[in-house]
Length: 159
Image (cartoon, rainbow, N blue to C red):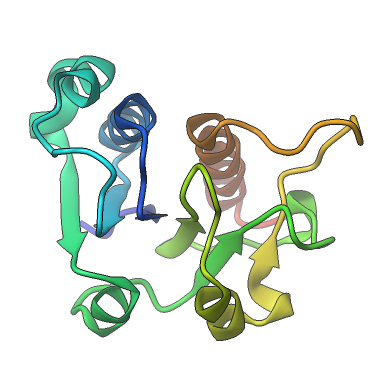
């Protein structure tokens, strides 16, 4: 069965964030891609606690780096980079089944070469309603983006 979405975490650093995202992927049937290096050990207790007992239900794929992810078999064809460095809003994107939602690390986002690979038309931002704040927590942003994409896929696009 084709997964509805692929969530791609670039160099995640905080185990509970990755655990929460993994749990969400298990619940929604999405694939989780972890692009190394990770800022923690995959058997970290905090990761397991956040993911609870869902980790065994998860389709998680590890990639040595961004280039290895791009070269991997079965990677999603359409990718979207979530970043605070764009004006393209989440609600203006038309997501499709099998898309990949890519998120940078908690402390520094995505590397410049990743931004270059995407170009402006494939970068997207979760809307902010307070100009005094910098960004959302990674697992919160992933949840918002995932459920908006799933809503669109279930409805057959934007309505």
